Image (cartoon, rainbow, N blue to C red; front, side):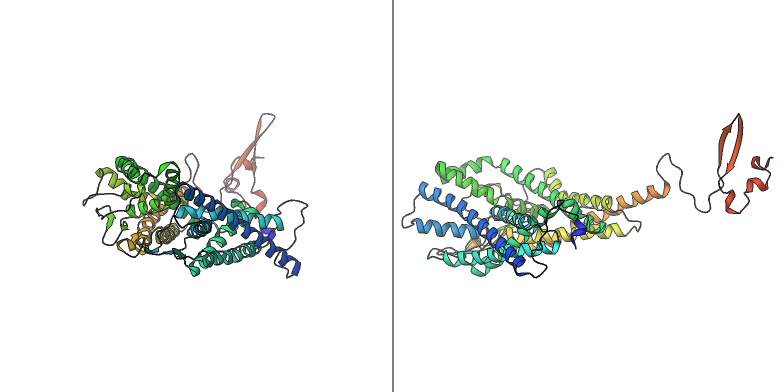
Length: 461
């Protein structure tokens, strides 16, 4: 895709080619800008997390943990923000990590991608990929170096996961930031076909509907368990600073809780330890860690809450599918009736795939013991979501598209339907001194009108 497809960014602005012309100066400027953006993003993120760890260390000093230990802990927490598994001495492998922390490096990398594009006046999509790579590669190298440097007898982060996870997050976040800096989303979306855009918008609508339903379900569950929530806080007795840090930890784990709620509404549910399950049909749970957010877990072997609430939660995936189907049919109506249902089902498949990936990252082990299995099953969530959302989206898209096509066939209310075949002669009237003159628009076509052959008004002298 060339710059002409996106239009000029600003009139009269020079547009150096940062990567596509093969000049050493252009490539050097791109690499330097990408490395600078990567170092800035990593430095700011590490500094913020170091402040948090330092505040916790001051509020509750740990014997034998000096400032070097604080810096190492902050580096491990920075790697945890990239969803890097940590091996903790005496506990085992910790992979149940807060998804909310990913927002910190994601926002910083978004800003880094924007700064690279704006500094080099990028105007072509292939240069956006080059800018994202220029940020992601040095960023992954920094993550690998921090994973090696933060190793201690207490905890050690996985170096391969640090390299891979940081590279993927940097590519996605910096790439989206670079693309947005080059052109608005509407202008970038115009480069896609109507059908592709309708599938992506329908998928986004389904995910938004499921996310809103999951957040509402989590809030209702917490509201219904306020006494248990307060009891866990009293048991921990974290103090003023500790309460603030505990609140930040719960906010960081809130996206995990929303994804768990979506898995619950879909049907497969989730596990909180080996041999446990939380599903609409019932929940079997064992001893839980002392974490306030876990107070919202459903209890009871035959489900909990009123029956109407359970029915509404189970209907949420189908409502999300209806939202996706309506968006697909409205954005790209098709004259072929089976095209819209196929695109609606594609929305369901894409939604299920994304939810499966989210479920895989929302869970993980919390040690080598009973809590080694925590979270929803990724393949079950992906399969069930694809079927439930896809079928509902296909039916809704087909129904809305059929209604729109039917209205096109029969015509809108108050309008005459389109007639097939040659148009009959239309006579228009012009007033001239009180006399009515009939004009035939088809007289010059060489065929004598029917009205003239039959001696109509136009045949009069």
